[in-house]
Image (cartoon, rainbow, N blue to C red; front, top):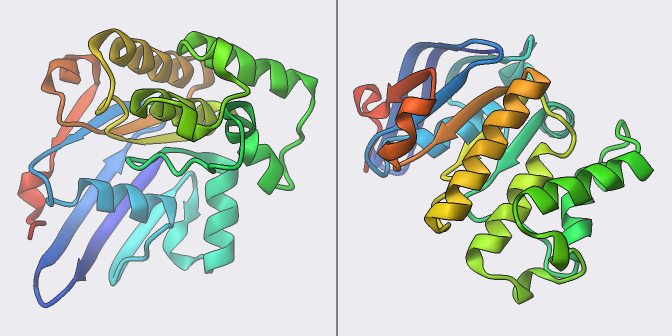
Length: 220
């Protein structure tokens, strides 16, 4: 699913430099990225998703060489194949909870918004405790509720790859367990690959693989 070759990414006057000589994440696997803040975990997610471009090296994702794509091609590839749970959620304040969840279907011409998709959106919301809040707006939700909306949006289109950046960072234990179970269930049911950045070491035994980013030398 993901192959990284001789990756180099940095910024500032030597403030941050990430080097990954080789890394492979198998299709359908569940992998956790751990390590100190600033070690490059979130940076890797952004590079794999094509949000950022490396200074050197290659990234192959789902058979496409992401590093060879134009900005527009990377965006189209990301929308069609990758579900992203951002640390800052990236919800649109003028859209309701339901419309935020449905957003991938409104911005991607290859996805068809129909009654079945709407039912799936409502079901996902129900699974994370948001069934009664579909018509609310982001500023009417708690921090944790907004995070759960982001998880629903990321999983709606049944992506090949789920990239989650601290998906339980702002949730209480009950809702944290619910969201984690949801990510694992969807990954298993859809044959998706799950790559998650986490500082919650209590959940590491649930992942098939754990990668410690301290060895890659990123930092500030």
